[in-house]
Image 1 (tube, rainbow, N blue to C red):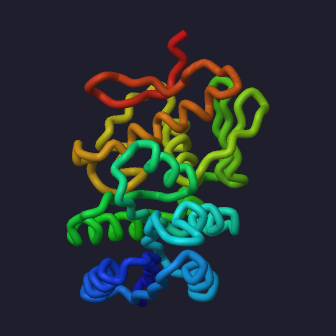
Image 2: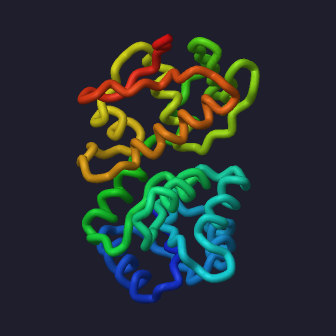
Length: 229
C-alpha cells in the first residue's frame, strides 16, 4: 500500500515540483494551497506524512502544525521555510514539526528526509511500558508525560523522543551521529544544526523551574545525561 503524503503550500510551482517528485517515487500525493484547506484534507484523509510551508496567508504553517498536534495527531511533519533563521526554526519545531528544510532545496534532499521520517517507528510502538527516572526528572512513555521535581513539562513529540533516548542511556555519551540516526532516521551531515536547536529547547524546558542542567555537552563527542554538580 502506497503511503499518502499531504503537501500544503500556496506556491503552485513548489506544489507541482513536489507532486511530480513524490509521485515518481511511488507515493500517493494530496495537495492544499492554504492552511485551512490543508487542515480539512488532514482530517479527511489521515496522510502518512505532511509537507508544510510556513509562510501562507490567513492560517500559516505554524498554526496548522499546532492545530494538528492539539488534535492528538503524531503524523510526521516536514516544514518548509524561506527564512534560515534560528528563531524561525525553533518556532516551527516548538509547534510540533519533526524536521525542516530551508528554501531553495534540492528535491533529492527532500525525498531523503521524507523516507527517513516515514521509516521511523511511531513513538507508541517504540516506547516501553517502563517509567524512567534520573535525578528529579521522570518520563512516562505510555502516558507521554514528563515531570521534573513533580512539575509537568510540556514537550513536543520530537523533544519527547530525544529526552526518552537520553533517559534510556543515562551517564552514557551519545554521539551526534547516533542521536540523528535514532531520532531523525538519517546520519548527521554536519551542515544542519537541528540537533543543537532541540538540545537548547530541551534544556530550556527542563531547567525553567530552577533545575540544574542535566543534558551536558561533551566537546567533540556528543551529549550525555548526567549531573555535573
